[in-house]
Every structure is written in C-alpha cells, then in structure tokens.
Image (cartoon, rainbow, N blue to C red; front, side, top):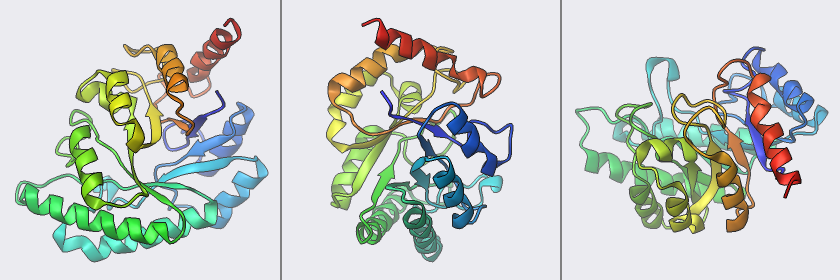
Amino acid sequence: MDQFAVNVSTIFTEVPFIERFQKVKEFSFSRVECQFPYSERTERIREELEKHQLSLVLINLPAGNWEKGERGLAIFPDRIHEFKQSVDEGIRYATSLNVSYLHCMAGVLPPELDKQRAKETYIANLQYAAEKLAQHGLTLLIEPINPHDMPGYFLTDIREAAEIIKEVGMPNVKLQYDFYHMQRIQGNLMTTFQTYFSLIGHVQIADVPGRHEPGTGEIHYERIFQFLQSCGYKGAIGLEYIPQTTSEASFAWRSAHVLERENK
C-alpha cells in the first residue's frame, strides 16, 4: 500500500518547513500533504518536490489568522470577499504545485452568528469555490472536525457534511474522512466509512487519544488498512499525526505494517 502521504505540517517539525521534503524522501515515501504552504513561494516548494520526486496531494485553503484562533472563513457573511481571495490563493498554489485536493475549513461559529445564516453562507461559498476549482480540474474537500480538539468548529457531524455536499450540488465536492476525528466524534469507523464511501475523496489518520502515530492508541490500524484495501479505496492516506516522540521513531508502525503484508 504505497498510499501514505506524510503531512509536512505535523511531521518532521524538528527541521524548517522547506527541509521536510528531503526528510520525507529519506524515509522512502513518495507522497506528501500540507495544511498551509503559503509561507513559502510556490517556486521553492516545487523545486523541493521535483528534486525529491514527491507528489503533493492535498493543501488547505487559507483559513484566516491561525495564531488568533481562526479556523476557516467560509461561514462568515461579512468575510465573503476575503474567502473568495483565499480561493484564488489556494488555486494559485494548487495549479503551480500540481495538487488535486483543497480542503476548505468552515470556521469557528461565534455566539453572535446565527447557525442557519452561517450554514447558508457556507453553502454559497462552497458553491463558489467548487465552480472556481472545477475550471482547473480540482476537488474541494470538507471535513467534520471533533469539538474536543477544535471547540466551536462549525462542522462536526458527517451526516450534516453529506447533506451540505448534496445541497452544494457540485460533483467536485467531496468528504475528507479523518479516522482520528471520526473516532472522537462517534466511532463506528468502518460502518460510517462504508455509508459515505461514494462521497469520500481523501483519508487521513492518527490514533486516539493524543493524535499520535498508529499503534499509540485505541484504533486498530492494521484492520483499518485491510478494510480500506477491501473497500477499493484508491486515494492517498494522509499521515496527519503528531509524533509521540520524534518523527523518525514515529514510523515504527510502518515497518510492522510491511511485515504484516509480507506474512500474508
């Protein structure tokens, strides 16, 4: 299963961002994903990707002021212009770096904003973004995020996410299914995955609790990997985990996974 994509926003943080691509290659991965690449010029990132023969599969749209606690712009009626600018910026990076998937974070719902109005704004913004991305053959992703890690986040329910995708009505809008978030939200991982399989465009993993690498918590990831294979999931599996100790040590699960496959 050569589907694993190292998230260079959470792994190899021991070195500066631009040096993480070399570290990924040293550990024989061929795919990467990144939350926010916008602090580096596209030319510099592309140079690293080409040098190390890596494919960047996913980035997030700009999500506002992260340091001040912002987690997306899409639900805010008074920030639609800013959201549209973020879409343009995301497309610029995606087309330059040959990225197929862009994750749109919804935002944290403030007490003064009516949820229904936020939802209407969210859907309209998703429609706008999807239409813009479709012009470049790109896919837009939305993801339920658990409220323990991100209190107040607008989208925490996979059923609601599926309903929103249906209402948006664009074929290039898909679900990002993060096994970590889904375990913290509701569990029943394989059943839920099968239920929404036709809508799922990208998968991410981390163990529960702690959001560390597979094998550090309660999720039986070898069963998950076998399940994904049996389902026919062909996309990337993003390693969006926080290493429990060091990035290098966190890949012990991968060796065990390879041995498990070879013994079958």
